[in-house]
Amino acid sequence: MTDPVPPSLDHRGSRRLGRREEIFWYAFAAISYVSLGIYHKWLLNWIVGPLWLVATVAIGPAIIDRIRRRPTSGGAA
Amino acid sequence: MSWAAHQFEIYAVQAHLPRKMQAQVSYFGIYLGDFTPDFLSKFWVYGITYNGHHYGSKVPERWHRGWPGMGITHTLFLGIVFTAIIWAWKRNRAFTIGYVLGYAAHVLTDVNDSVGTMLLFPFTVLSWTLKTWAYAATINGGKYLDAASYYSSLGLVMDLFWMVVVLCSWRVFTRDYWRTNIVPADPHIWSALGRRLPERALLALYRATFFYGVCRLVAWSTWAHLVARPVINGVEHHGYPLDLSWNGPWWLDSRSLHHVSPLLVVPVVLLLLALVYWGANRLWEPMGRAQEAARARRSSSRRS
Image (cartoon, rainbow over all chains, first blue to last red; front, side, top):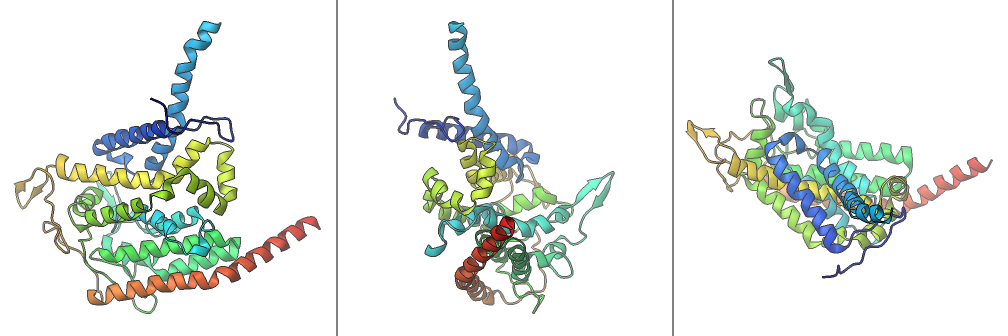
């Protein structure tokens, strides 16, 4: 199944997220933050909350990209 | 006090700007304006306990909203003073107008709890409250009891109401809206952030306050009704009892200060809201001209 909005590159050459991938990362951030926040309430504050989303959306796709690239670059070497 | 409503109202203000201000009012201005009242007053409301000694306010509601106390932080008067200082300092119309709109949203929303705000300070220090739900910040209960009470009362409905208002304007969360309405109003801040962060992170930063509002609403409500095991009047409950009656919940003593009749509150709030928008509307063009003049002066002094 193809993504409705194909990813492209932004001003820094980083990948933009397609719609489904974006929904996935936002949902992942929300579910993880709420699940942890219920039992560790110090997480529920105006600094950690917004940073949680920004960090997830910035770092999550970058990690996935790196993992996906590794076998290819290893094979080429 | 209101909880996630303060996060949602930022986007509600953004989505309901007068036509001539669209794409020209700073998101960061609205955010900072909405954030200032609690940032200045709330740290001491719950206080901290260290080595068995409690450091914090003796009467939380008086400290937070009363006079003498930090109640002045929840007045339109101080909002206008701060706005004037920001304007005199930066001559930035987008940020200044955003700041006053955000500040007003916070002050006017907080009339809903049983303590309310001093809307007409400095003319009177009487509080204006609708007593929709109980103000629940206490020394012993701290943040936990406050959250449990808020999310067991009409405060929960208030948060959901603001969330629906914002979701009805869902376009404010799209990438297109961010690029065409949010970034142009704060070009320097977004440009500085853009040197360090990818676009997907910048967009997430813009949406992050809404994300935080939804998550804290869900997390605190879940904890209060499914996880907590409170003992109320000697009886252990599975979750705090939900009570959507006026000035609820029943299981908590509602705090209040000297206040005017709640019947006066709605018309005065609507009048003040209209006055704030009218003032912003009237000052919009003169502020634009003053901003251009200040910019021209700065660039000519740089050349010489």
